Length: 338
Image: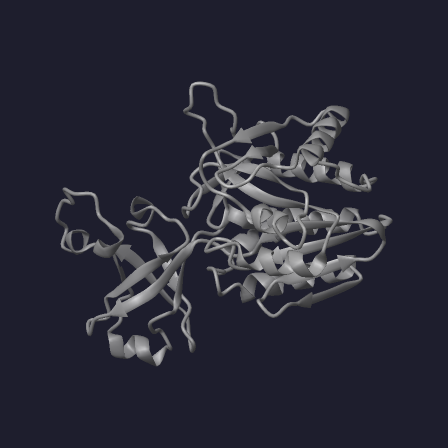
């Protein structure tokens, strides 16, 4: 799991995905015929071959923070990048990416700093980062308004080596899956584009431009999704297999691709789950609306505590997702008929 650990540990808040892209670039080059970085920062890796041209997309960016302002004492106030609940931030360790040097800090409130009891629900505006440095010292390290802030949470295990926890599981898990698929499918005959997108968490921007350029016959976003384990009849649980999106807040998954995946899961005896949700969306939406329309769906790995520094995922779900997608791409159908 060294690759997954490296991907999770890398800092890659939306708009600052360079470190993640460098890891992926080195990992992918031996297994593709061509790779490049487009004008927006997406990393696109092409395995040449015959039709159909299939696009797999996972986003490199993670939710995080950005410096909004600082006072003379060095207390840093921030804006969120992507959707993060304020409760997930309190007492978290973070790293700020300065132009000269990165700086570590902790997220706190004025009450917590003074040892007082917090008797209200803090909002983002009530939180601050304490680095132990003055503004002058932060200036010397290139820490300024607009500097990205990320959780410090390397990969670790809960109870057994099967249960993984860490930051940025959304969507470094997807990036890891694409890298592993590229290794397995190096000698496959059809053309595959592995697209590692930027700025998904703030507007699906990387997927919009890359899908327009790639023009695939159909596409799959490889993602993670929240769990619903406390629902009366849960449909998205860790350890229960890949999750196929039927519907999210803004799109319907392609029926024909979903049917292919269901058939493959039965043949390979891979447990699968289905998601019908009123919240969130993914790169698949942006891809599906590109050019004249591209049949698209989402295959996800269920993650507890999504968009926090302590996400939880089952390693078996990752392995089953790789097997499921490999089953489709070994001999992919030529066209997806609506």
